[in-house]
Length: 297
Image (cartoon, rainbow, N blue to C red; front, side, top):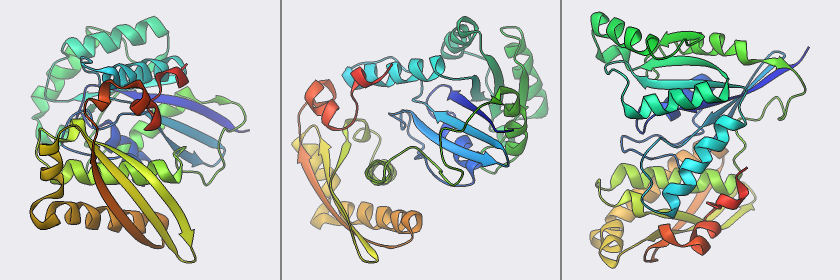
């Protein structure tokens, strides 16, 4: 009998949500960065094991919205929880719950959903500290399971999947057995390029960057991609391009390597940088980039 479940992965920025999902899937479908607020859209990662299909929803990290893009990200998070069959709350094993975690736990309680607490980065904390963290969360909510993990190394990730089986219910699958994500090829390309920008640039620039795929075409055994990188200031454009174009070239090289590995063919990547002031507060720009709040239930 086929079983399926939609499972929202929630938590504060930079706690390891995308890393956990990628590790559970055994493939990289959600971008990972040391910088916070990396994930902007809800991204589904699909894991099919035998008759069971898990649909993990990687969500934006909870933060105080300062523009229309931030509003969209928080609406996407709330929508993911409402549409889920279960919730995985991921938190740092070295810290007691803060205001963000308390808000998320309140949301879990209000939803009435079963929930798993994943305490990540256990490789960086002492056993005594982990025990204190577990106790502090237990005082706030009776989670169905608590799993300490190190998602980056894969430690105890299989245990998270095992505990997530409690969310499964009989029903037809929403995706094919070999599907890995619900993201279209253009979205995947856009996110890979944005990840490399996060990797190469300093801390101030990435939040004001978006990537739009203007051309995605298959030509025999090669994919041709042309992308616009939008930033908010001329000074930022200069930083992205770099001296003699070296920074943009580095971004392109890293992105092309990942895209060729993902698609399994040669990729020709053409990157352009354009300035769009205050695009994060423009409904038109947000909609054209795929961040349309009206599309979220």
